[in-house]
Every structure is written in C-alpha cells, then in structure tokens.
Image 1 (cartoon, one colour):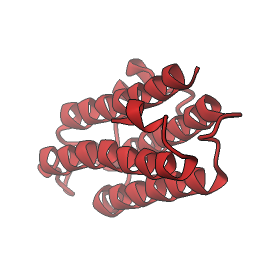
Image 2: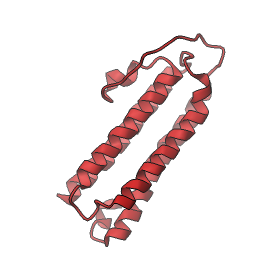
Image 3: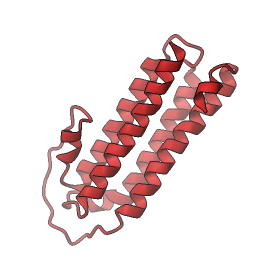
Length: 154
C-alpha cells in the first residue's frame, strides 16, 4: 500500500499517508471501544501523578486510572507524530500540510478517547488488561507504520 505510493507525486503520497494513518487509528480505536465498555463509574477513585517518560510496555502496564490511560494515549500519539516527522524530514513526504492533517486526525482520535473515558477521571480502571493491550497494539501499529515509511524512503 504505502510502499507503492512513494513512487507517486507528493500530493498523492500525502493523501495515501493520511488515509493509512486513519486506518491504523480507526482499527485500533474501534477495538478499544468494543473491548472496554465494561468500565464502571462506581469503582474506587484515586489520585494519580502519572507522567510517562516513554511508551514502553512497563510504562503502559503501570496505568491505574482512566486519566492515566488518556495520558498514555496522548504520549503514544505524540511519539508517533515525532517519529513520523523525523522519518520524512528532508524528503518529498516532508509536507507541512500533510503533517498538520495527520496531527488533526490524531487529535480527533484523542478527543474521541477523552469523550469515552474522560468522565471516569481518576477512577481505577475496570478491565485494565484490555486497555493495556489496546495501548500496546496502538503503539506497535503506529511504530510499524513509521518504520515502514522510514525504510522505504531511505
């Protein structure tokens, strides 16, 4: 898919990249929505000073509240955007409009997560394993995408 698109014009490539990013995000987001609807607002509430420095498995596994989940989700999106920008820097794919569209799509995805999980705030996560698995899969899918881009444009 993206491998063949690189040979096309910058505009066509940009559109393909955005669509691929939407597909990765959409596939994983829909899995999250369906697998984590067992949450309860009657769970225990705790305060959390969760401030992830990376997106490692250990960091993802350390989330304990829905706010932690949202913070981790945001960290994964930020890392993806940074990795993508680094991968395409100085190439035909280094297009400010495309990067801005990708940021907007990523922010839209984050806002959808906030709508679903934000009201639960510092409530302890019910069904933590499914959210942890979702975050790992989301991170891995975005990393695989940027790795493929990086490999193909070298």
